[in-house]
Image (cartoon, rainbow over all chains, first blue to last red; front, side, top):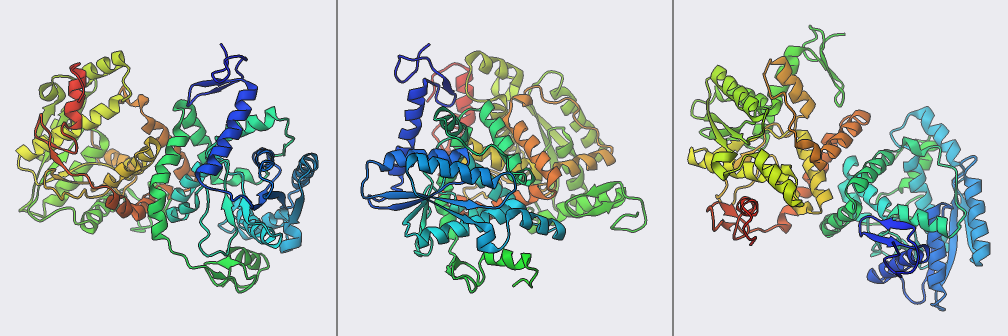
Length: 312
Length: 312
């Protein structure tokens, strides 16, 4: 049995939802081509964009960095750099940051590391300790997500980026759709989009070039490319509802190959409807000046809570 | 520790999502009151409705019959009867039909039994055999659902019913929302509603008085009320994707009590959006004359396939 693409080499991967059997080189180029296609389908980049690639040090974001670096070579007016957030999680963040540094040095890509501790005064470990004591209703992942997004937007802006690329895969997107449903804030899900609209100009436009690729295939890409990635699981992730959803979706995908795509397409049909119903006017946060739908932005509010001041 | 409602008796049920601990009588009346509330909230019935209660013989539908019978006594202009479909599943349908008969005789309610075999020429067992041979893409549940709905609508109409009440619980509704998402036909989910609009007048309006009650509580209601219900699992149900979804939702509900309600409310917010996007014009099926969005209705099309005639 030979590769469905080249018909020459032995296949190493069976793409169950399409029936294709692929050899290693054809698999790798299928992923890179899919990313190219996604970028052009959604008009993610302009020819002279300055792209901040949000790189956590995990396999998804390091693969994205590799692929975008390869694509960007053909666009001399465009430039990219890696932007990494050090959340301050013992035995984990350091390895992640080192992986990013190594990858960037190898690829000759500039990189910036911004840390929770410097930016907010707390590491993620300190935050988890504080919220545990207070028994708040938010999980560590909620804090981490909000605080990370703000750093990324702010630092990217300061460094003159015109786009932020994140490594959300098909799996992440489908999980988020379900997560929003389950949390009761389905209208939030309109943010699950390959390219977030930037009508106000207050956020740097975010794009997700991996949004149509299953996570499993990105992991395999990283493996075949010998990408050295974060090996330590986040110690707080087991607390997240997202894990239950991931497991459920993986089981469904296994039984019914293609399910993740179908859900994604289902959602694409209703996303425009959600968007027309959500009209949030952004203002500047009274504390940090970053865009916010409330007088005080979510991250400043979190930090205030952590500092034990009164909530607004 | 005493019942949160009466403060007198020992509780037998802990309602995790509300924190209430209920004794048996208070639990039973909490269910009946919830049904009354749902009926009035959605304006399900008029004072002189003739209600066909779709009763499968399972615990949900027999509980519904009991509760509606109790409520209906106070509305002398209204009437109700039970409508049962015998799908023709060996070792199962007969028990179901007998349970319905017994319940109706005990409550002094008229009942009608319509059978797949008489109506379509095939029992469900025969259909499953046929579709297995052909390896069609539809599951037994898809056939059964479509064929049952048509019989119920047609027979209820012939018997002068002005409403059809079905026993869909909160669980059924939430599962269907996910099922539609996963099947890629999210717009179909606009049918997940306590009261289906009947703008064309071609369908008898269907209402779901149990739609806001968790299935677990209905099961407990049936148990406390000594309702004798269907004991044999449907032999074809294990083939259904719905089972995976049910399991997932039950696990979530266990970990995060109230999740099913939250998903249901999430969906209520987007349902109106879906509805405005779906404008199906109903005509009469060319074969059976029943309402259909296509020239030949889904059930007639299924029967044609089974008869091995050409598809339209």
